[in-house]
Length: 317
Image (cartoon, rainbow, N blue to C red; front, side):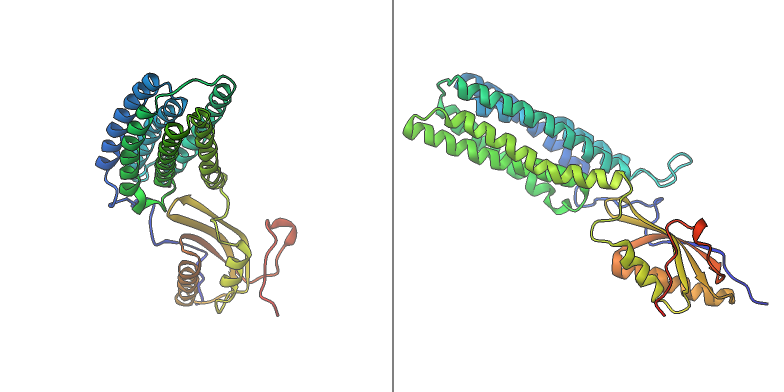
């Protein structure tokens, strides 16, 4: 008797065993929190004593690193929790949500820095460049160290937000150092608020892609670089597949893509349908890094276009 497997589910990386980050233990982020707290206090004191809006702006910018680091720290731990009755996909989206929240926070800070910078340009204040030089060198060492410690995990969207944040901080420290040297050599105090505006622009620039990518995942968009029509074409190339419809592909977490679809195949023994299933899964994993799949097999009958969404796709005759 011929049998057909009506539904098949498979994954190379189960949500019950989520991706972890062995290269970035929580201790590194903990040290980063303490180092950033120390830096914020130092820059606030230095900015106050040196009358530097650039240092104060950078201190406030670094202050936003504290919730950023804490949110990402919590998300890193939370995202490693296994699936349960309420979160059947696990908690990997915690990191994506953290990245989106951090991005919104950075936009607010950037707008505030723009406002302060323009106010200081309109009403210049003399600065003590010695404080700017000392604090910028200290900040550069701390931010560069944090960036280097986290850069190995930049492909994770949550940790990428930290890498971008601290790399931007390091660049702004270089800018402050250059402005301080320029003020010492020329007496051009406008360089201080000018570099504050550059820091604000840098924050906005580094945040744009982060918010876009995190929002795309939260809205169940297709994984970046994966075209749904190319995925359908790859499935149709598997011998025995006659039609693909109701196909959806999305990203669960930074390193886990998922797919579900209906596939029409001839009525056949279960062994043969299992062969087709394994061929489809292998092709999806190799060509698109899609490792979590839910594929429902259906008998090859005339399709009903009015009931299918999206419309079914068949091999080209």
